[in-house]
Structure formats: C-alpha cells, structure tokens
Amino acid sequence: MRRRVGTSWRRWALGLGVVALGCLALQPEGLAQHRRRGRRGKRLKLAFIVPENTTWARIMERFDRELQERTGGRLGFRLYLGGVQGDEKVVLRKIRAGQLDGGGFSAMGIGEIVPEVRLLEVPFQIRDYEEADLVRAQIDAHIRARLHDRGYELLSWFELGFVYLFSKRPLRTVEDVRRAKPWVWEGDPLATAYFQAFGVDPIPLPLPDVLTSLQTGMIDTVYQSPAVLIGFQWSTKVRYMTDVPLADASGGLLLKRSVLERLPEDDRRVLLELAAKYGAEVIRATREENARARKQLLAGGIERVEFDPAERATFERRGREVSYRLAGEGRGKLFPRAMLDAMYRLLDEHRAAKAHGGGEAGSSEK
Image (tube, rainbow, N blue to C red; front, side, top):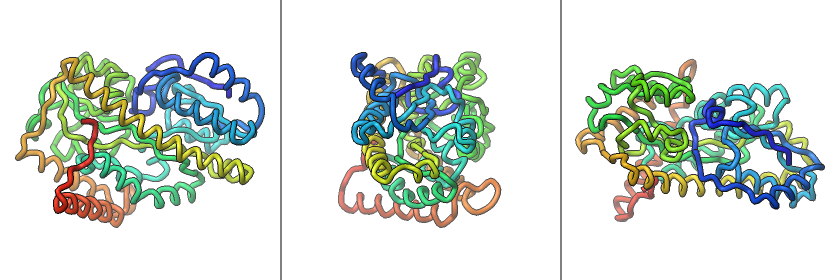
C-alpha cells in the first residue's frame, strides 16, 4: 500500500473536528511487509483528515492488510492521511471528479450529501453510548439508501466521541452561556442554531484558528471530545469542563457507488465484511481513548462542573426546540419531521423502559 500523509496537525485541523486518538505506530518490519504486498492489484484511493500514527490510521492499515490477504492482493487501499487531499468539501469534489474513490468523513461531511445524518448530533438529546447506538441503528437503513441514491456507499459508521463544552469560566446556568464567547465550527448550522436559541451569536472559525483565538480571548468556550481537545492543545487554554454530553459526534467511511459496483463480486463481499468489522473496532477504540483522555484532563487540572439541576432541563428543551426548527423540507432544513419524531419516540420509550426496569443508562466517557 502506498500512502500519502500530511506533515502537521494543522493540516488535520482543516476538516474534521475529530479524535486525536492514541498514537501507536506500525512496527517497521510489519510496515515493510505491508508495502511489499501493496505493489499489485487495484488500490482504492481513500482520503482522511486524521494523521499518520493515530488509532484511526493504524486500524485502517490493519483493514488494508487483511483486505489484501483475503483477496490475494487483488484489492487494497492507497491511504491519503493528514488532510493532504484537502478538507471534506474538497475531498467530496475529488470523489465526484474521479480523482479519489472515497474517504473518512464527519457527520458534517456526510451531511453535505445527506443532511438528515445530523440527527445523530442534536444538542443535549443523546445522553450515552447506548442511546447513540439505538439512534444510529434506527436511521442506518435510511442514510445508506439516501447515500446510495446520490452515488455513494456507506461502508461503515465511525464514531468521533461525545463532545462537551470546555470554557475559561464555569458554565452552570443559561446566563453563564449567554455571557460566553463560544466558538462554532465554521459552516455548522446545527451548533449555530443552538447557541442562537440562547440569544448568543457564536463565533464561526475554521479549526486551525481556534487555538489562537482562545489565546487572544476572541473566544472563551469550545465544544469538543476530550481526546481531540488534548490533541489540538486546546486543553492548555481552558479551565472548565461542563460534564454533560453535548452530542455524540459521528462519521463514516464512504466509497463512490460506481467504484464499488465495478469490483468483482467476491472482492466486494470481502470489502463490505471487513468494513463492518473495522468500523466497529474504530468505534470501540474511540470510546476507550476518549475515556482515558477525560481522566487525563481532570487529573491535569481541568475542573469538572455541571449544569444547575433546575437549568439542565432548559438546555435539553432548547436542543429539542432547535431540532424541530431545523426539521421539515426545503432550504435550511436538515431532516424530515417524521424522522425526528421517530427518534424522540425511540429515546422516550427506551428511557421509560430503563426507569421501569431500574436499569442504568450506558456510559459516555465516565
């Protein structure tokens, strides 16, 4: 397998606000064997924002090795790591132009094709991994079908981890949020609408500008997973973590539909089988990495705070209100009303069953 990699974390930050996961590199001898096996056969060109030597990249390397072994070298990957092919919008253009075959995308990136995938990230609605898994399973067939209709195939889901609010001042109340200077990822309509529901105009910035803006005081609040907060060094500029999950950020591995359809049937079957296997491994590894990162942040001096009990319901209610504001058809809408209603029914029924049975909710990173 031939790889193209970026040379800096700044290149990574051009697109995906995702996991800066554990850096376990391939052993040199294994990498040499991997490259020798990658000299023949078809190589799918896949672009990723994640850099080399992260957990994501390491898992994709193993995916490629097993794919080559199972297909006798007929099929493998050429991975472009570290954002060398550009941000997610650029990568999508290159896929449409036939310059790339696919890549790894955040929900924002997938949302450029199928906006309703953002259901997975409605603020303060999904409380733990069990609920995240339920909602993802509920919309899975719809998202796959919509992507297929638009010329893509979802090979596997990825998960980027639960996102929290991190700030220079403690955020416990609605008034605290109103006084904050929050950042939003440039071009994110969901996060923007949520902050605006509190009368706050968030400051949209691309990821490379966030650290400097924290340093200068242009912003004082960010939302991110624990692992990426450390990886981007934002953790050095904030003091508080509001310990209520904002959203479980999701993503996926996409392949151009025509590319998949041209593969021999046996190779296509192996690819799809392994995609499911390694996608599940990415989700498991991401959850473990974020749990470790969370403990590292708290041990390193980040102070844990929670919303006042009387106010937490307000934050959840505003998230629900924003979701319905963005539901419907037409310009500025992200998902159909019926899908949103179905998601809330699922969550309400699940929580009622948990309460009736005395069970506990699944963990986020705690």
